[in-house]
Length: 334
Image (cartoon, rainbow, N blue to C red; front, side, top):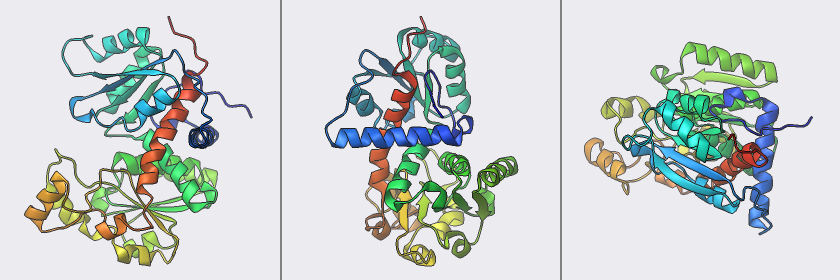
C-alpha cells in the first residue's frame, strides 16, 4: 500500500493510522542511516520552516534545526507571545502560512497548535504541548525498535510516574496502534481520565495489543522490555511536596529493573532528568526534601541499561522524517 503524508499536519498520533506511524518510523530509520553513512540527500532545499514557541518553551525544538539544515531547509525561531507581531493566533497562522512551508509549535495549550493548523494552510507540527508530544513518541518508538532488535508488536513497555503526562498519553496512543503491550504504572490519582483509558484500550485490542493502568509496581514492570519514566516536576509546577510524596514509590531504581525479571530491560527518559543534584531543580529538591534523585536514580541513568541519549538523538531523526514526509513535494499554498 502506497502511503503519502504530503501536506499533513502532526498534532497528535490519534490522527495517524498504524501504517502511517510505521511509515514515519521507517523513514526516520532510513534518514538516520543516510546521515551516519554520509549519504544524506537534501530533499528540502528552498523550503522554510518556522519554529514557533512560547516564552518558556524556547529550548524545546530539540534536533529540529539540525534536521532542517541537514535536509537543506532554512529555519527561523519565533515567539508567539512576543508582542503584537501578527495579532491573534489565527492571524499569526495565516501570516506565517503565506511565508513558510511548515510550522513547528512548542508551547502549552493544545488548542493553540490546533488553531495554527486550522488557519495556516501549511503543515503544522506539535513539538510539545501540555496534552501531547507526538514527535518525542515517534523518536521513542524508533529507539525501542533499535534497542530491542525486535518488532514493536513484540515489545512490552512500563511507564512509571505521572500517567496523565503528555508523553505517557502520546506513548500509550501510539503503542495501541502498533499492537504493543503498554502499561502505565502510577498512583491512581495520576491515572489518565477514564475516557482516554477506554479509547486506548479499545484501540489496542483492535490491533492485537494490550493497554493497562496499574498501581502495583511489581506487577506493572514484570516482563517489561523497557521501563520509561519522565520528569515529575516543571519549574512552575505547583504542589512539589505532594507530587514527590505520591510519586516517590514509582521512581526507577535498581529494584525496579530487578522486578522486570528481564536482564535485557532498558531504561528510557525523555529529558530533562532529575537524577542527581547537578541541575537547579535537583539541587532544590535535595535541599528541601532530602532526595538525591527523583524519577530515576543516577546509577540507573548512567548505567548500560539506559538508552536516554539514543532517544535524544532519535528525536532529530524523527522530526526530520516528519519534515520530509509532509513537505518534500508540497508546493506553496500561495
